[in-house]
Figure 1 (tube, rainbow, N blue to C red):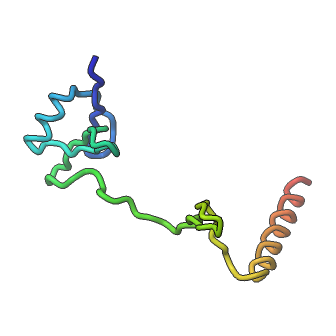
Figure 2 (figure 1 turned 180 degrees about the vertical axis):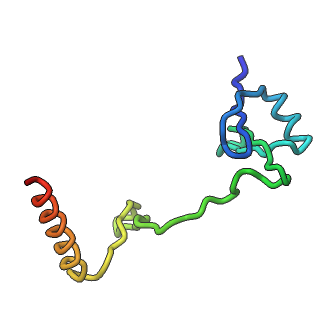
Length: 110
């Protein structure tokens, strides 16, 4: 049995499922935009916006990366966390925030 493909409108609301053949016809007529999986299979289809623009962003905005791949001397690769600040420069800020939270929590208890 062939698996159906989810179909969404331009705002991202689900509109049901389509067969692979129906999805291919919609793509050929440029009515929808497809999202493909890493192996090249169609994962979902989205209707185009009223002005004909694609409803899906091609690239998601990337944020700050706090982890990165670290190459060890032994030749292994591991994930490491990004260091924030040098030495103990962030410690006073962290302790201030922590004590403020504790003081506010104690005052709300009574």
